[in-house]
Image (cartoon, rainbow over all chains, first blue to last red; front, top):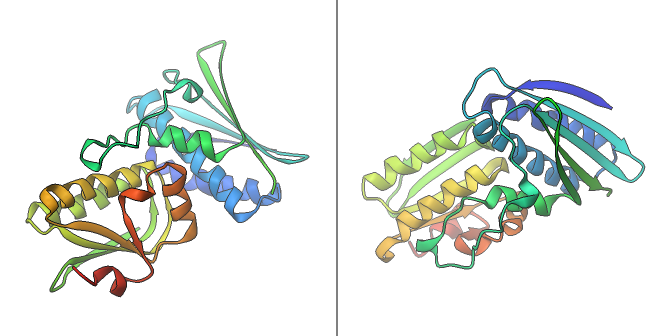
Length: 136
Length: 111
């Protein structure tokens, strides 16, 4: 298990991706599964940074990864505004290009890229998002 | 992260190395906007050096595509796209909005 605190800034995203890659390799995930987890975590962290902390520069994201018997679990915690991606409505991408609003694509990608996605609010204003990807 | 653009005879060629995420998507958007603001709406984006794209990047591509395709004047095409990026576009259900080519030459044909 590894626990790392990252500044909640877009400049942290590359480092967060590296942490995901390391965790995915340790858990024995395939290259595609590792990429999928990287995508889901990146989307989640981007939401936390942009919407959760709303541009504040002093926020943090706690990143915890754990190898499971059958895959990888990543838990993200933050203290920004709560956003539950499991409750976000599914956007409609079946429209013509000129009517397309790409907002919401990140949450769709997050939901589809991992096998389990769970959100809960903890005491003290802490938001916790758990992502699980099964091997391979 | 490195972005370059070049005006060719029939289209503009944009090349990028690195990640396209919320940190870097803004700069990519500015490169595309500079081209489309000048009225040049046929663009090939060589993604051979891009190893990752998030929804922010997808948004930039599709916003640019909207601008290029308005009134059927042009198009944004992508080339040298690795499988993980195709996977991302497919996962979001957005792959059908952009043509994917094996090479820049193939993408440039018919422009």
